[in-house]
Image (cartoon, rainbow, N blue to C red; front, side, top):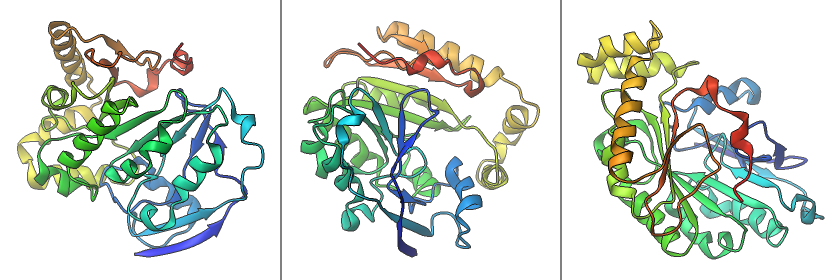
Length: 293
């Protein structure tokens, strides 16, 4: 594992994401080494010879002198790297940034596969509209271990529960949904009493990991070869259309609000979560950027 410290001018990057004003990544690279990670494209810009998942650059930035300039803005922590990957326990760059921004009036959303985020629960809860999202795309630990080096699904669910019970908004991010493998309803059933929001995102194969994932499917689930060819070579949407309909029926039955490409809504604590479908990336509405009131 190659870990080095680098100096950067700022860790706050203006974002084009529909859900935030700033994108925050205190590290370059991620040791969770997810096989399906879209962020592996970052190697084109960082010139790392190591395989994705085998290097991390730890960012050092100047102290933020006027954090109040971020008031009423929103920052998304973890857009291309997990800000609570294992090295955060030593370097504490995410915690340092939270301490620098505390009291500024900025809202934060954090995406992670780690329960290390629990270390900062008391700090995170001081931010307005704070939200923590936990990525879970299976309840099968064998499949999870094949796909990433994050903590177990059990630990992610327990961390989600602790944040929810502490009054911090939580999201169960079911991503990526592997056709024929991921069962979103099964996951929601486990998480529905401890999250305000569920995001559903399809497996979007592109870049160098397309070949890697298709090869893994062929080796471990050859019975799914035709399905994946239909979806990812012939560009058929029928699988996602059928899953969309199945999710609509399920959420209606369970009294869960069901939406498409819309990040404006959250359920109240104790109510069934809002479920949002992000199956069609190219059609994501810019209106999703509007803030919750």
